[in-house]
Image (cartoon, rainbow, N blue to C red; front, side):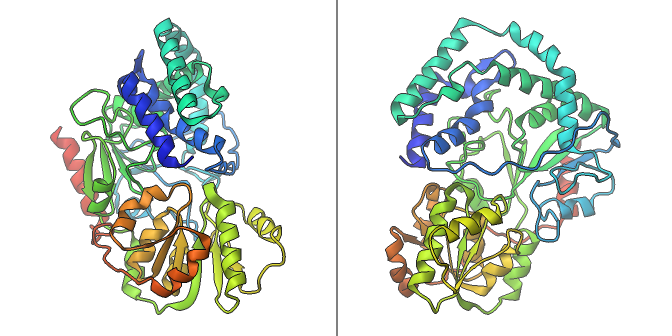
Length: 449
């Protein structure tokens, strides 16, 4: 099985049951659960390894926040300096802004902590939501759910016991959070919500219900296989179209909109490359004869084995394995050592090492699917993709000739001999637009409504 087969099975049952438009009470159930289902099936089939759990955030009994027309939710993962490069320029450019804390890196700051607020709102409004969802129940919804599960199990040969029971709990939790966050955004007098990685669908739904214009800033790779963003059936003005997606998606370059299937209801605005990419392109650092292997938590073991194989086969070639920020360094070290004596030319970089700096210094870069693959092309590296689960996400990059496929591990020698750099990256990393101008334009669009 591969990710394309999972995607095809999901798309098949979506069309057969009209799942994108499936509304239970006030909630589009399939839109809420689709990404969870995709990930679960990928993990069940062994294509993905489960992503390590995030450190828990201590609960709180109360929180305070300031009213501001602009609210910003940063990206949960930070760079080696503890910065979020995606929202930081906008925070600096804003005159009056409510900035949320999110993740363990922000815990204990003076900013309102997302996880604490979310837990408080869920607890406060769950009973109200539960009483409301009771009246949404019907045999037709349960039967439809059973048909969806049966279709996926039959087409993919997987066991979906975890989701076999009709997900009433999901409706309750989603509604409770939506009620709570809607009240919060109204209280904060928010007009625009800027968010990096808008995976919290209830947050987006709540902001929209409060009359807030939601803007998602691109933080990484998106494609036509993205289980949250890609909805090829939404072409018209259906109320269901992009119900839980941002009003605007701020992309790094025009490529991303063309390569994905975002609904037509989501406005695309090109904001240009992140600051770190722009600076690295300008530096034009001289390359070292070195292979950099980009980690990916869902296919971690395969990449570890690949890096070790190449290091053992080419003892004079420095090989660096850069773990993904979601991976655990100790687990990576243990997995490498379990394969036998470690080649002396194999280095495992710290999880929080600066990936851009590693890329710009490396002649060769190999990975599966990652924003780093696009960055490596832009920085003049010779880039290869291993045909492991998920490589479909970067098919347009392969088809353009910018990177070279490595069908089998033993094909690495052909890659070293034939790979060429390709700096044609303007379509996915455009010239940056100043943050203050982007914010001004966004607020103007709110005033025009």
